[in-house]
View 1: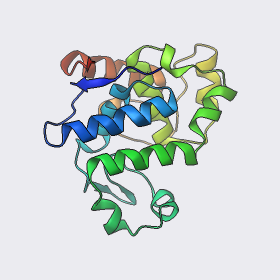
View 2: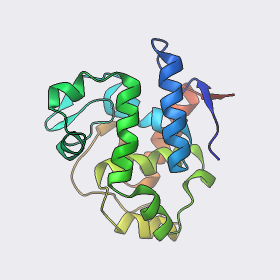
View 3: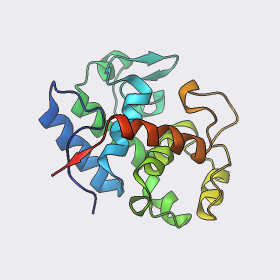
View 4: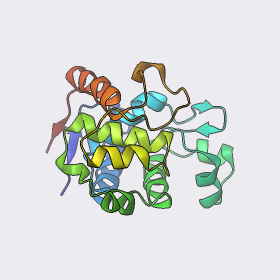
Length: 179
């Protein structure tokens, strides 16, 4: 069972109780630490619900497939509150069968170090259907990139190892606090 995040990990003060409730619920449903989700949100949008990068939008920079699945327009999705967008991220994880993919590759995300959990969620953002990085991770190989295309510069490459190194530093500066 995932820990219950109560603060830290970059979670903003404004609307914190509802944000934490959504983070904790999505984390529990997907067997990840809620702080890992918060860290990905910080990397993707710095908690800006109206963030837009090309076709990717919102806190977690989801693509148009989620907006269509939710039967929303882009503007209506961007008008959702932070907790609503976090809940939508849970729908996105379900859409890409996160739990099944992790089980199929025998990856028990919640048992891994927090920074690696965040790296796995970030890799899902970049390449949700890719199998190479998941097969490599199952064997302990953290060097296989999630995607060959350039992504967030702060993460260096999209390998689990490079992203885990970034998130380790992130959590050093923004440590999570649990209930």
